[in-house]
Amino acid sequence: MNHKCLKAYTLAGVFFVLAAGSLAHFLYDWTGRNPVIGLFAPVNESVWEHMKLLFFPMLLYSVFMVCRRRGRNPCVLSSLCLGITAGTLLIPVLFYAYTSVLGRNFLLLDIGTFILSTLTAFWLAYRLTLSCRAKPYTLLLCAMVCILFACFLWFTYHPPHSRLFEVLRLIERCPAVPI
Image (cartoon, rainbow, N blue to C red; front, top):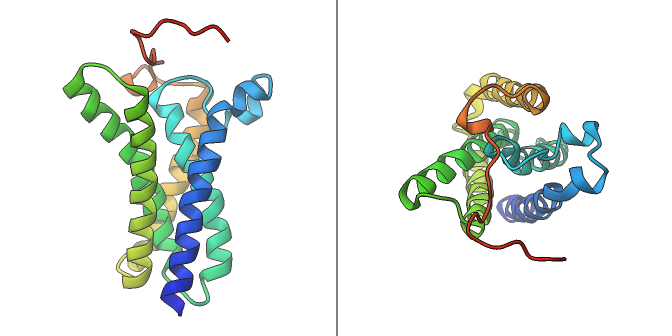
């Protein structure tokens, strides 16, 4: 029964992150470029900013899941922290891997990168919650999430000069579609 309940929470988390992350992509513009919203939603088309699409929704869902499941699943905190970190870092890895092979980015592959990173994050969290193999590293994993959190807040408005922070031109060869 415990495994079924954990699986249900995990699947709900996948759907929550996919939905919230997709909506977050547009949130900054929808709020009139509110600088506070920009701390948690992408402010431009850089890969760094798009890592927020997974990080913040999964962090929010993880707080909920830890509050609900830590009694029955004592390893859920460390597992979710590892999942958040791995899923967030997988976004630039997959993006730069496919763009280095194809020579440019494609919107459908960008969306696929987000979906695959989210699935991977929750799969890792689920498996490690069951095995408890990440529990000895709870403090380190929580610290990594906190460091990523601080980096997102700082680098949103103070990005370093790095390819990760460059604004991408999406679908470069497609003509503009009038709305």
